[in-house]
Length: 267
Image (cartoon, helix red, strand yellow):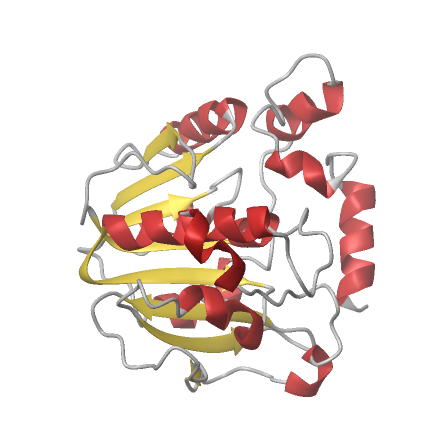
C-alpha cells in the first residue's frame, strides 16, 4: 500500500475535518457548531502524522539528551511527548492551538503519571516564551500544515511564506545558543532550504530521511553554528538502519517550493 492509499485509509478510519484547511482555524475542535471538529480530539485518543516515534527514535537519540529542555509545537493527540518522557527526557513543554486538544492531552498525561510535562494553549506563530528558553524545539507535521492553503504548491503565497517565517523566527528566538530545532516533515530539502537558510538565522542545517518505500525528512538546525552560504545546498547526514528509496520522492507534487524574496520587506 502506498502513502496515498495509507492517507485514504486513515480518512476512512479516523475522525477528521472536512478539509485540511480546517487545521489552520484556531476554532478547529473548539466549536460546538460543527460536531466533527469537537469529535476528533474528544473521541480520538491518539493519532500520529508522519509515522510514530519508533520510526525516527534512532535520530532523536542522537540529538536530545535527558537533561534537555524541550518545546513541542502542535502536540495535538500525538504521543511524541510521552515517548520522549519514557526515554528520560522530563523537561518538556507542549503547545497546541486547540484548547480541546490541550485539555485532553493534560488528562492523558496525568493518567500516566507524567506530571512533569507541561501542556499549554499557544500559537507557534507567536510564541510567548522568553528568549533562549529551550535546548530543543521539535515539530512533527506542524509546519507542513502552514502550506495547505499555499495556492500554487510550487509558488506559495506571500502570506503563507510570511507565516512560515514567523514560526521560524519564534523558534530561533526561544532556542538557547547551540540549541536544536528538529523539524519532521514531508517538505523536501530543496523546497525548505530558502526558509531555513534565510540570512537572519544563525543555525546550521542538516537532514536525514526515514521510512520504508515512502520517506519523510528529519531536519536538524543548530543555532549559532551556521556554515552555509545563502544559496548553498543543505547537507544530508547518514542515518543507519534505514531502507531508502530516494528516487520515489522526486515526483511528489504536494511538496513545496518556497521563495522568501517577496516577503522580506513585509516583516
